[in-house]
Length: 116
Picture: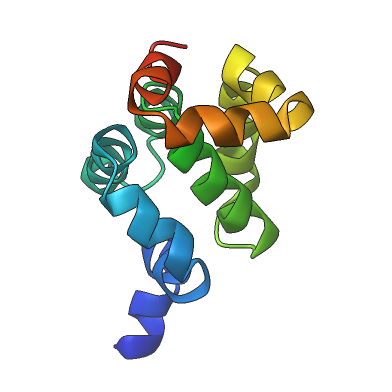
């Protein structure tokens, strides 16, 4: 039975993306996305897409990138995550690394990031 449990995307992510899942669980938006995904029925692509695109922030993106690179998610999951990552915050994260890092360290600025 343990082998079956490790075949699930969440188990794979927990095993291979430990720092990202820990950060995600401490983040209300990202953690809500995990709970949403866990409630989806197998093969329910609409549920999957809604969970991913409805719970995007920096922690969610980092978790999604790890899950994709570690092979924990299906092509559909990766596609929805890629669509969801095509956001202003992703652009900022990609092209303004030092500024986003400084912003995350400032509570007022970091609160503003969640609006993007």
